[in-house]
Image 1: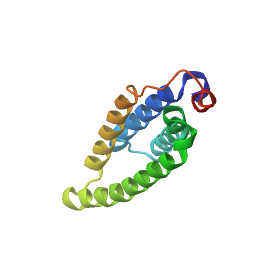
Image 2: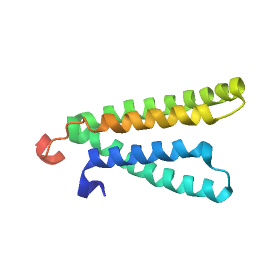
Image 3: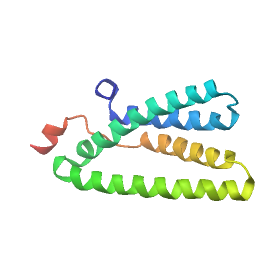
Length: 130
């Protein structure tokens, strides 16, 4: 999909789908509903991950891609650690995970909107570096 529509559009759609799925999460009341959430969120996460690994090379060239992927991975892991702690803290304060899910949905939808502003060059990675 990313090869056909481009990594920016794939990132936009994937983050948007993840945000909408997370927005619906507090409303899910059945196991099958949770399965549907997991399927949508998981497929969308896969699309976002492909874009995250492709965009640094396309935006900044192959020479910078390794260092940028290291920074992105570090940020992603720190965010995951902080997010799980924060969600637990929100649960302790409110007795519900719903505010944490809604905050996560808002961040994902914001990130989806920001993806529109990525200026991906039309030339391929090889041309950008050689």
